[in-house]
Length: 185
Image (cartoon, rainbow, N blue to C red; front, side, top):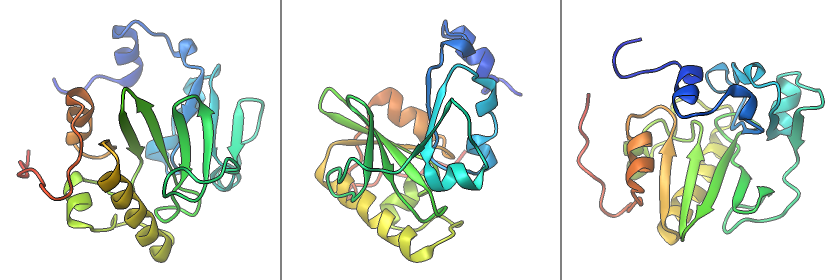
């Protein structure tokens, strides 16, 4: 796997956790690179949109199909509070049941988004992901993300970019008016 990557179950162990310690998983969407390993966590409740749960044919005591019945969360129309300070937000476009996660901590908002954008550069440039099931909803979601980021101190955590972990580690708040210089690997 190279010297930069550790298999996730080994990484969990190195951090002092066992897979059985995981009690909640918030799934942004159905694609296998995001959902393919949820069966490795038998003790976890898996929260995902009802649409995605149905499309994946997921059911069982550990599946929590979310209908986003907690109302608006800031400028997003539909949300579901999972626990205090952690919300699953409807963010349709990339898939028809796509979601994002926002965690609040110490005055910051941490936005975990699956594939609304693949890179931070796309967020700054206001460019859609290259894969979407509903282009109009994808545009609406990206517009909502950008509005939220403009109005709230947000650490943006992309899944498919090396900047995701750096943003988290450095608590880097996104400033859409001042994009950083892109440094390609």
